Image (cartoon, rainbow, N blue to C red; front, side, top):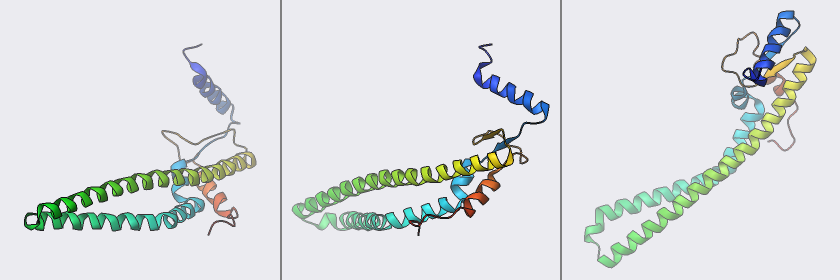
Length: 171
């Protein structure tokens, strides 16, 4: 009995129930929900707007760094040692600042994306529960290695989410 495990027992119970003919199963493609739902698309646009200024600042510093590097490579041999060392120190400091900004940017961006995706997933879970209850599903899986299109209810979830009123805070 232990070799089968709990998942095996659940699967066996599902098969027996399905064989009885009154068992409904559905599958949802969560990745598709996170790509295609109206809430996910709006969240992505909000995040882009929120991080646009920081992204532009990083691009500006990257350009300054490249220009300074090019200047050093091109004119470094004609500069006095003091000027060249000053420019090299400036380049090193600029690159250090740039790396710090890029790391903080990635961390903040990932944090915001995770926050927004959690909201989308919570709404999707609510939609899935509503669909399951209203249409008499016994089990709905969100992750599956294979799903037969007959049991895939992702389109229903997307339709439910698009009909859901949007937050007043979303613009």
